[in-house]
Length: 175
Image (cartoon, rainbow, N blue to C red; front, side, top):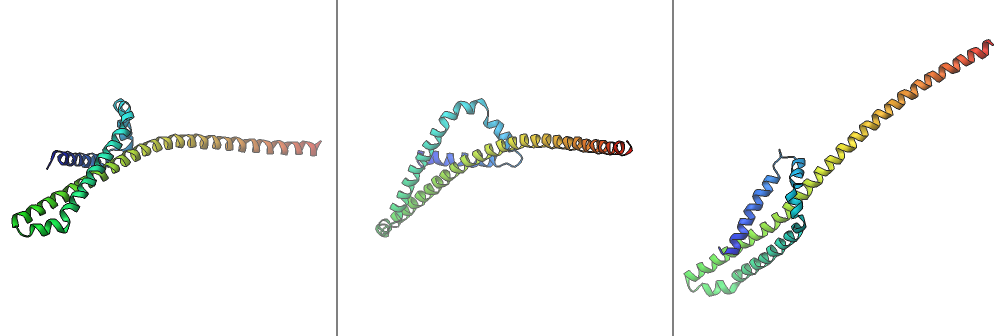
């Protein structure tokens, strides 16, 4: 494997490991949100989008190169020319295998890069939503307690008012 495809394969393996770590169920979204709020990430965040799109472009270029190689070695010309010599035939199939391998490595790497970005975005959104939900739940509980207190006060006022009306009707009837 050439240096570029070795780097892409290493990048793919690193993406697989990182995506698996992100998907571990016992690490909550809140914990990931805390990790993503570290100072180092805020320092790197201005460069993150540039790096993300640069990696997308590099992987797309390598993916197109891999497609070109697959098409070059899978056409009828190399196989037809190689049928005269068994060694040349094996060599063409070896090149085709490598081109297909590179295509799969680059395609999966590109796909996982996009998936990893989406997972990080969703984890942050889930954590922020849970924090907002907890705040709204606390506000709702306070509003519910206040409404119950007002209902009780209203009920007390109704009973007091009804007693006053009865007492007033009794005093006007007797007087």
